[in-house]
Length: 458
Ligand SMILES: *Cc1c(COP(=O)(O)O)cnc(C)c1O
Image 1 (cartoon, protein in one colour):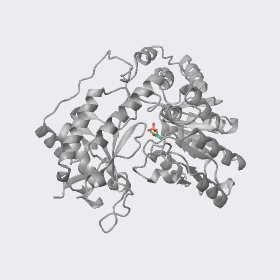
Image 2: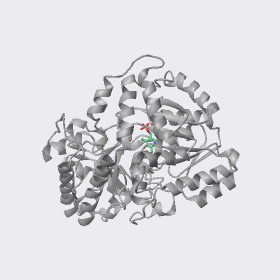
Image 3: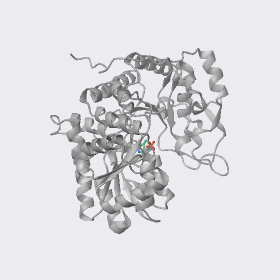
Image 4: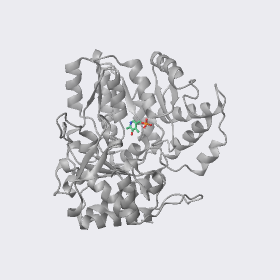
């Protein structure tokens, strides 16, 4: 059959609020025109993030009941350790309450002031944890990543030439480790090829620099490799994931993504002396090393979820959904970043709203139009998120792009929900010149997008 279906049926439902346009006008106004300040109860289709928002399977819910809540050495920990080792091959494994806890422990134990950490694209919490200890987080995306609309297959790759130059300039002693983020979230959920992982490792090995994989979307990346890279079509996603991890010396993970769980993460490595440092700090800030800030039942749900994320039929359906929406938007002349990423579609709000300047915040205009039109919640990745206020008014840093992200929660929405989304965007697209300019009336000195207040500028 050509039709790719959701490879599950629904056993439990969760009601969606259906609101009227006039209700949404009032709700958005009372949220100061910032969708982050809306109650989730007033959002019909919530595409704010794919983090921790997925639906667990019946097997995960059943596994919760098997949770062993023993403080030390629980059965659930053993299962978790076995599963993570089966997928990654790492020798030492530590559960954490989220990905950023793993990053914090890694940064605090391995980095010193002035050290440099290269990455194809640091996620914001990774960057923040590295900078918090006084080290420098350097992004080395491939040059293809900057071409928003070109159909390159592995736009998440690291630039190998730039990596060599950086090592040359800094000296390997000042680079305690290098990271690769799969898929590259900051670059739009774009995949990293096996070839690139292998080449990065080869370069690092010559200089004795360990490679740490930010593995949040390891299964989505494995799917892209299977579909797009020569020589992998006949391999299972588990085999591909194992090969990917075989080039790494450690990994950080948020189980809120490809763990198909609502909370959790892990930190893993092969080096015993690193692991002892991780363990000691973990006990101080997360918990005993066999639970690391998670309940035994969470460890069970994650153990099941990590393997479910590697089911081919699941990944095929997930990517088909993203592609379905992407091609519908392209055919309606709605400019999106190409090719579509693994977990999200990014609309180019600047191209969508040529009547608005960056200082009009076209991303905010489009995000608010999505909510007013259909109760859809998306997020701006543009001058509000990446810019900051200049002391004398105006913007200090203009963002390179004005994007709006539609993130896809895992196993949550059906195709008719996405048909609805397409209809909403179609309606907005037909009168795109009416998307309004906004200005900021109140903002925090950093991470302002979460709490800023806006008003219509027109
Ligand atoms: C979400 C994410 C993290 C951080 O994980 P949390 O669980 O949110 O702390 C790190 N890296 C990437 C690529 C992510 O997507």
